[in-house]
Image (tube, rainbow, N blue to C red; front, side, top):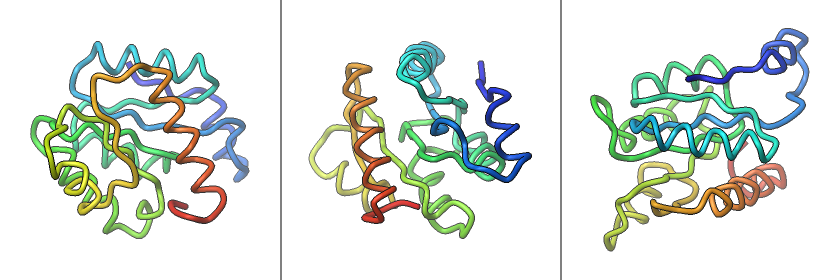
Length: 148
């Protein structure tokens, strides 16, 4: 279930900013996407969803979200490679990417940063903790200390 509200399309059609930030949520588990998408929408964000790395790239290039929440373990193209490609592309390199993953072993956070992730959240995490990290990253991005 992908949510791309009319407000996204209307703002883009008029060339103006979005009324609320758009988050691209990338996770191969439907239950995770639904839970986080509902909570993010409840918290005032617009949400688009992707189930794998290929879909994440296509939606990121099409929608140019304000932030991307990227699971690293995805079928096909994993989140590591998808993030690497997003950060190499001029259109998307400035979009903050937060790794949201069950990979919590030593070195995975640094490895995620090495491919371009701007933040790291270990799963499972409470939805409110994820929203807090999204808000922190968006504020950081707006103040010019990272992201676009």
